[in-house]
Length: 480
Image 1 (tube, rainbow, N blue to C red):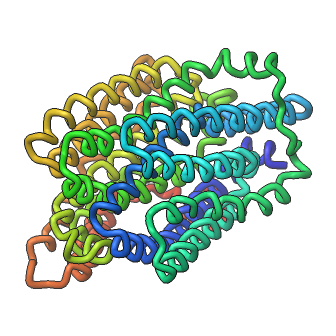
Image 2: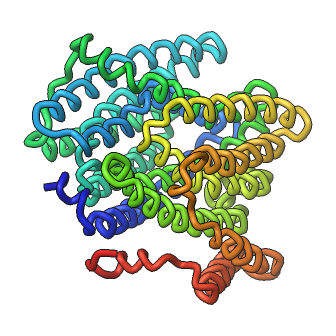
Image 3: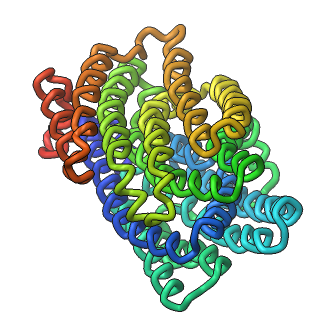
């Protein structure tokens, strides 16, 4: 049984392989997404591309607010509960997500009508339909993640991404305008909803529960975390909203393209660290020493991967922008290079966030989320009038790096057994610094510079013996 697996030595290797599989399937889907994004931005142009990203960002805010942290809470609870309690928890999660999503879509649609006019108002409502279907599918998939059945989760995510790109291709060929493109997430989510329901129907009930008593019982202990998730979601999207209000449409378009690339890749830290979260939850309940060990190893892997992704994206930014938007978006390359820092820091922040959640540190997460939200609003609002899209990128990168430091401090404060091994930090910093050298070989193609930087980065880490031995689990089925 999955519950037994979480308490065995096989859980670690299973989570590592599952996390790697999710990242690989996401990467495969992202290759299709890059093609779709390039077609979409070239088709819509700079101004409509900015409007498209504004509508998606507003719908993403709805996603975060209506999630209320219930996906992560659901993983934690379904990894530790059993029997009738587990079944009721699943029904309650589904009922809450349905109601709050519908309310969230209507409220954000009203805001869009008031702030941006009819076109974007309708666009947000259309995109909101996608949020509703996607939230139902994501809630039904929670048991799969809690039981480390990550192969199925990976396959469903891959299918959703590919289907979305196929719809983009069809609409571009048909010469569609802005609104039909915003309906694509709803169609893609609806297609993967059916197989998701079939996979879990023997494990959990598919009927939502609207029992207010059950809702209150769940809301009591998780309300603080839910508010924190809402603040974190707004924090991630606040920059693009501020740019849309304080800068020109051209600057919004430049920032939007880079933000779109980073936004897609921001899913990777959650996939990588989230695979280990059921183990965190079980260890937090049963074995604090095991939790400390798991957090330390996942931190090391996340730091290594995050630094490499940031390095590769920063060097490869001109190529990514050329593929995504063409020459009209050329000025977005330095903006994307700065935004790469946000992506790298998020890998580390994901470890601290899941660690706090496993320990039920909801108040700490809330304080951190609101602090970061306030910081990004102030910093970006100051820098956008000064330096437009690039100022917004600098502001978000600075806040995210600060979050990586502060989040780790808050997690280990008073819990010395959770302190990670920091010897890896200077090793990764040295590897990244040396790996950045090919960026200055401007006579070489960008793609070759990215490859050389990656090879240098990996070689330095190997020479310094920085890779955790647990990564052997990717190649072996032996327990790590």
